[in-house]
Amino acid sequence: MSMSVGKAGAADSARLLDREIRQKLAAVVVDANAYGPVGPDIGRLTSLAADLAKLGIETWIPEPVAWEWAEHLSAEWATTRNVARKALGRLTRSGLSAMSITPGYKDASAVVDAFLSTLTGSPHIEIITLTGESAIQGLKDQILQRPPAKRKSAEAVKTGGSDSAWLRDVLAQANAPETLLFLTEDNDIKRAFQEWGHGQPLTRTAATIRASLFEDVPASVVDQWLVARYLSARLPMDLDGNASTSEGQLVGSTPNLLQALDIDWEEHGWTGGSLTRLTGLAGLFDVMCEAPEVHDPGRSPDTRTIRATAVLLADAETIHVFPLGGEDPVNETTASHIGLTARTTLVLQVRGEEIISVRPDSETIVFPESRYEDNWDAMEGVEDALTSIPGLALPEGWGGWQTKGDRELIVDGINVVVNLSWDHGDHGGFVLKIGDEEARISCQHDDGAWVGGSDGIYVEPPYYVTVETPEMEGGDEWALSSWMIRCLSKEG
Image (tube, rainbow, N blue to C red; front, side, top):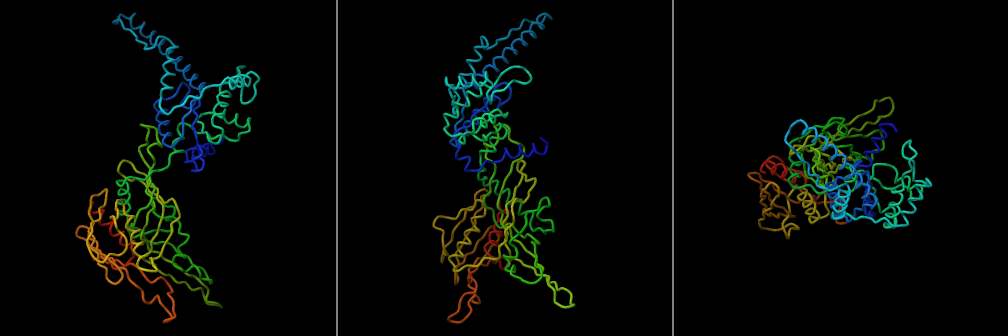
């Protein structure tokens, strides 16, 4: 196997399993070699079992596996005791004070009994008893060298009876092979499954099982604001032609840009375009981080990963090139487009409380300024923008454009209060105040969207939202949320 293929396989086994596969799992079965050549890391094993129980997955230890661990540990104990006794004898012969060793266990049998007692008494761990019929079939496999039994290395030593026996018992208890995941470091289980017609078993190692089973969880509001402040501090940002691949860029490819600008219908010549500038962070959705259970206790890396869907305010430029006909040269026109909204998924690496890298992890979807059929739909758009602000929860009873009154909006994670005063106007509106800064939001009706007199129609939805601040006039609800994030980042 080449190094590149091996690395690819290892990376694949560390990925989260599909939800459908995870939902079928009933138990994780632990092989004797799962934690090394001697015995289990009981702390890691019991921690894993407790975390698997949260998912409704049991942890099974076949009885022969427990016996094998106990034998390895008792042999290790005997070796350690003998080495210690020799060292003590040398110290005593050198004239040092008499020393003694308290072994803690009477003999190797006591080590076996103590370990098995600890294992069987561990919560969330079930010992799968070896049945007589499975023991007989396993022994026959080993003696007759029926697969998956084999000879050990180059020696004429037959082996494999134990694995063959306990595999039969766990399969019988599970009823369906696809409900089992095996924690193992070798291919013996795969050979057994192939021989018995069960297809390919699901296997993982102690290093990859957690990443395969535990989904990302919602990030704390503190981490959400960590991301928001980091992105806000980087904007505005001019984009170059390599925006989809350059280190530290925030957007990927934009396959729907021309469609969003309604210029993908051009039939003559060539039309292209790209985002040219990101002007502000307008919101965050689905901010997720790795579940604590992804890593064994005490083994978390010094960096962690956060994934987030970011809404960004953006500008774009399009170019239309077409021939004029005859001997005339081609004509080229360039147009700028502002006030766009772009949505993209980002992956951020965090060390401590510092974001050390960011990259896009999806295509970037572009939207023009929002238009609505009525002012109630417009208010729903405003709610979407407001709830994209980390920690901002709309108060109970919120909904629709109110005619009068004042409210306070609490932003968790930064302990800032946003003051809201309703100012309905013709179609709805309100004023927000954060510290010394203020923004006025109003819903407007575009009379020009109606054509055709009394029998006419709306050629586009007539309602839209506009935002006014001392520094800005215009923009939709996402301009509002971008203003709020900028102000809250300074206040919090």
